[in-house]
Length: 253
Image (tube, rainbow, N blue to C red):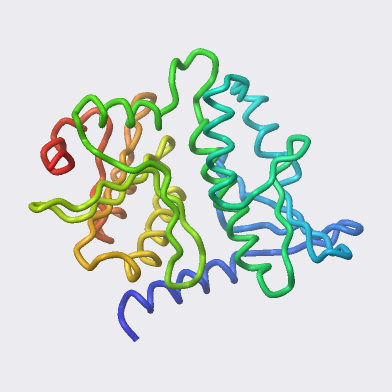
């Protein structure tokens, strides 16, 4: 078993050991080890039905954003929300994110719901009415202004069979390899851990010399060194937003 395989197995052990369930009537509350922007564990809910299993966030994701002043009320924000949810096969109904699962694909469908919740929370964090644009839009505008060619919102299936979404892929050129990029609006240690696993699981199915990058938003607060050190340890190049021009040549070729 390779070192990467060992790391992935360790990740699954962490995921299993740090998860907990609690029966609430006909629903089961699943507490995951993933942290939200308040550093609370993300909770989802599952129920068995005649069609299989329903798994939902209980409407907590959008409710929390709305209570924080972030309304997803503009056509552009709604378009981004739909793009995120469609990428993970998640339905949006009456404020809830939900998926249907069979016994066989329950783990993957649960994973997709959690990834969608994490993506939505990060994408719209701090995107209140006082913020003119979303961080993803800022990154996209900068890349286009620098004439960096890219394909947006690409989903890769990892070695585990789980799906992971990346915000941009810059195709290889004659002088540079493929570059895979995620924009992290709230660069916490939890967000870094999520990206690290996504990269470890997908690198086996990408070209050997593919390079991962992470844009880290430091508009509102500085990025902790623990985040950048963790990313570098797994071969992911962190790009702090205020220092983005330093990386222009590596991305534009």
